[in-house]
Image 1: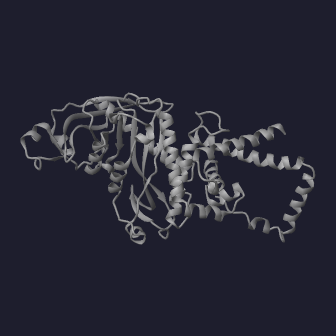
Image 2: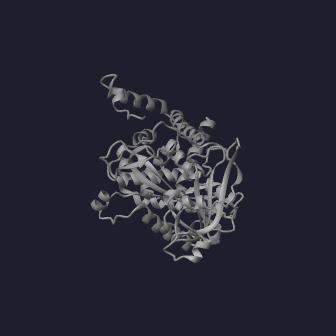
Image 3: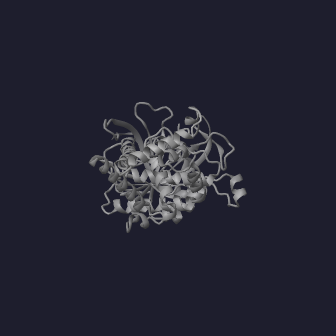
Length: 441
């Protein structure tokens, strides 16, 4: 019985820890606690039905919570992000082999839906086909080896904007607005602007985004589109600002005097492999932005279709450091993989988009909590799946402990028998036993 009592204590420690971290008001505390726990345990599908089975609450309570508390959950996510970032920034360590300490990574992901009937659903071109669903633009901080998701930017379709009287803006416009209003001091405290670098792929090769980053005093490393206009220093001095621009692919083909150099980079992970690139680089002018360091890179062994172009605003940095920094962008892809595979990012069936937003914010809250050493989970080196299994064991053992505790009380055994009899008396046929069990996939 001592072990069972200890398991109960572990559950209450976990409960109080989550409530303390989220700081949500008393009226919503229980329902939000159990919804977060339903995302933080291992299951095949993190649905409302699963949350209801896990907590013993009604499914409709979770549905109403998601529909009516979007702003509350978004505020909670912002608060968790700031707390985590401030804790890490107390001892800010430079990114390995790089002059910066903080990386802001921008990338979008799709949330697949079954049909076009839900609000704000659209067909998006993705890879070789189409994806039906919602698009989210994620902006994350990478500090001291940790990913910290900030409140994401939802993409609103023109139809959804008309129906809700929202001014339609493109994804790039919304990113510019987001970065302009982002006060990084609220996350990491006082810092030097040149300690921050923004990483993004060619989907964000946009002069307004790049000039916004420069206006904040940050550096950027962004992959460029093949048609982006650039101009050599010599030509920039001789021609008008509106003349002489070349597509970057053509520019590097014409710069035959630039030698190819071999760069070797070790990959992350347990099996650290050496990857070889060949590169050409030079200082040049990026159209409508300013002077940058340009790098043309391709794999040394397999060159066809793999050539990429990068622009970096820090002219002192080496081309090898540019490649190392850009590889950090892959961290956000791992983040997307984790929230989709383990935390139920796509396990939402709500028609109302406000509910979808609340769900996504809650998923990101669960991600931060899972990487913040919750009570009952031993070992920071554990995978997210192993941590989920530990939390599931804490919850299940707590329920078993509560039943055993009731049986040890005076008349507990008789009360438990009467409760079972009353349940069985309501069952008219064996099939009824399965009618009221929510389907959990």
